[in-house]
Amino acid sequence: KTEEATLNLTKIEKLDIVKKELDVKSWDTSKVSLPELITSLLDKTDRDAFFVADIAVIIRQYLKWKKNLPNVTPFYAVKCNPTIGILKVLDALGTSYDCASRTEIETVLNLGVDPTRIIYANPCKQISAIKFARAHNVKLMTFDNVSELEKIEKFFPEAELVLRIAPDDSKSLMRFGTKFGVHIDDCYDLLEMAKEMNLKVVGVSFHVGSGCFDSIAYDSALKMVKSVFEMAKKLDMTLTLVDVGGGFSGSNDEMFEKFTTVIREKTAELFDSNVRIIAEPGRYFAAQSHTLAVTVISKRIIKQEDNRQHPRRTSNNMRQYNYYLADGVYGSFNNIQFDHAKPTPMLLKPSNKQPTPCTLFGPTCDSIDVIARDTQIPELKIGDWLYFPDMGAYTTASASSFNGFCPPPVYYYNSISDEELNNL
Ligand code: PLP
Image 1 (cartoon, rainbow, N blue to C red):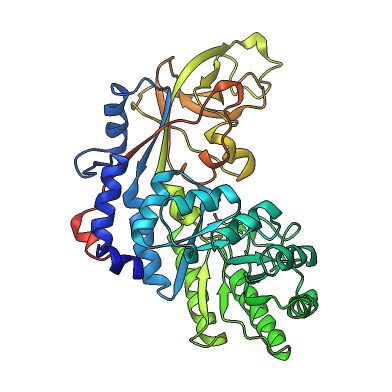
Image 2 (image 1 turned 45 degrees about the vertical axis):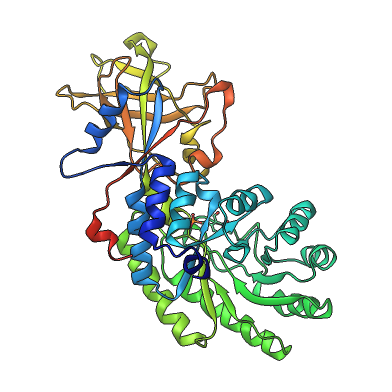
């Protein structure tokens, strides 16, 4: 707010600046479909794979967040997709950031973001990164064990600490409980130790797990947080912050409505109005913002006598195909390995051919580089393009350049109407 007032710019004006910086082109979706847009880019690029990012998705998600969780400040989980476009759009909208490392903190600070808009939300931090956070006044950070407290006491005693607890994460695809979060039975001791070390604990955080599918997870986690608030009270410590973490779906509106209703109702019931509620959504903002377009670089016909390779062939007279795409699991499709994703291939040019069985491989020399095994697609030829929607979360973030296949570039578009923007 202060920054906005100082710069005297509205969110719309800030977005206009970002649009120029990122060379964002306007996109009227009522006139140009996604396949048409991708097709128009093929003449302009010499790349075999690229992303189309629609910043309208991020803006709409922000508007939906404001409507459903008006009292919860989103700290975007940079790890989900640190692409500069997403970070800049969110900065213009005024969100804050969850950073997990020195590099993420540095990236966000370089945007000109105030350090108070950052939470260093990695409970196990390098000493060098703690020193970096101190030098740049990034005070808010999570912890969940004694050694972390000892490091912070030594290297950043003025830090504002958020105790990360381990909630029941059995309702999530990606469970963090075995790695992070203190068991509720150990919270009192840890708070007491922090007090003895004269450290300032300001709140409690949890993460129900990435890809959460049941709102009961937030309900029970918030009750746990309340009991930690009570423990702190017994120790004469006043907690003022609740961090409800991430785990919000980027594509399932019904689930988002359910989760946010629980969060709204439970936080109002359990905590005073002076308690600040924050969250660390990642995929919620990023997932649907990026579509990946990728070309077929090679093709192999599997003949009948190659039975050993494809024993599950559906019909004797049917051929099977291996297609080799310009991006794979070492690149943007690493979400298949790390995020339980099942990307859906779409044909750029509609085909009236019958779907035939095929396997989609990535471009590297590794046979584990498989995007989809035994799927069905009308026959493709080399140079044909496929596109995969919803490729914004945990894709480029953990893509490698193994074998020299570098992550694809991003072309930015904006399909939001002025009318929608007026709600900002
Ligand atoms: N916060 C923390 C500490 C995380 O570890 C993660 C994901 O790993 C997130 C937030 C973001 O989770 P999601 O993308 O599911 O919202």
